[in-house]
Image: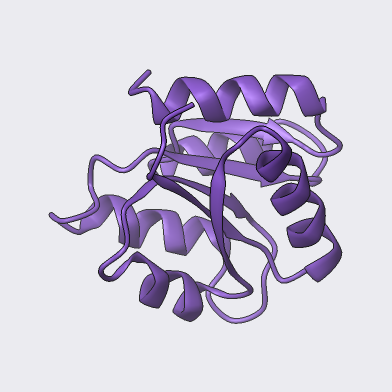
Length: 125
């Protein structure tokens, strides 16, 4: 697994953050956590983040707006963003992709599939 690059986990649900952190740490992936968009933007400063996993539904600035901000900034434009959401229907996926997300994953997700997505994105895929 790609050694020093971190995965930024962004979700206002601490149980989800705990689970993602555990799932990825077992696979040897370093993570950094943020429970809102402001914390995520701070975490992107000076860190070697190779991927952002972000939930859509968060108070204040939601995951879609965070994705737009990441993709709109020169420094982070190429950073892969995977949106995770439990929102039903195809609307959430369409909105995520329109906001610049590289991929949309519906919750509940398959753990092995998510780990494979993380590996691929950290490897530059």
